[in-house]
Image 1: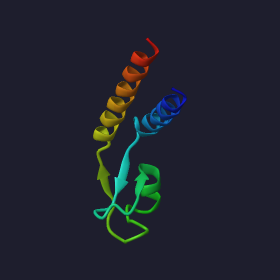
Image 2: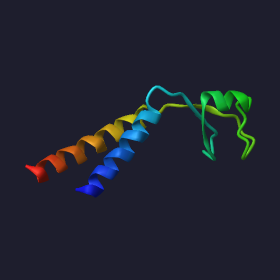
Image 3: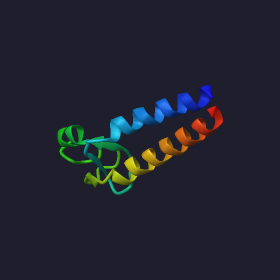
Image 4: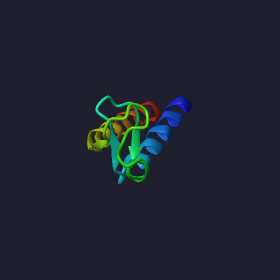
Length: 80
């Protein structure tokens, strides 16, 4: 049960970080940058030199929400 709470806390933190932010990455996905950082880098990857392109993070957000709900459902079943 304690492990589940720790996992939920981490997932919620990740969701909070992802939500409402704009990310950029290169084609080889060397790294992922927030818009502000990508702008400072002139939208060029400092690792490989490729252009940084917008990366949709809605699939990540949906996956996090799904995992959070699944764990919440499992922990509520165990405690019931």
